Image 1 (cartoon, one colour):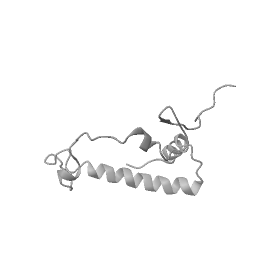
Image 2: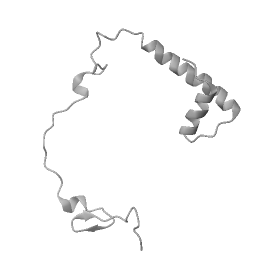
Image 3: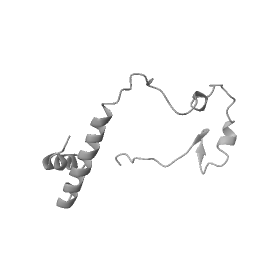
Length: 98
């Protein structure tokens, strides 16, 4: 699948990128190569591969979900720059209307 120059310009516009003529030509070639490779991957027979297959053993992906005692609040807040009412106190992220 080969992308046209206009399609690359449209993609760049969606991504809010300003591309030079050289960049448009280079991206046209590169993106077309990527799409052609993806089309080749569609030809692979993956019917015998389970959707969650991995090269890692299953034990490395999961651990037992065991509840444990959490730290006491006073220890958690010990090194906090500021705290108030057993919570971290941080500056507001957004200032409201004055």
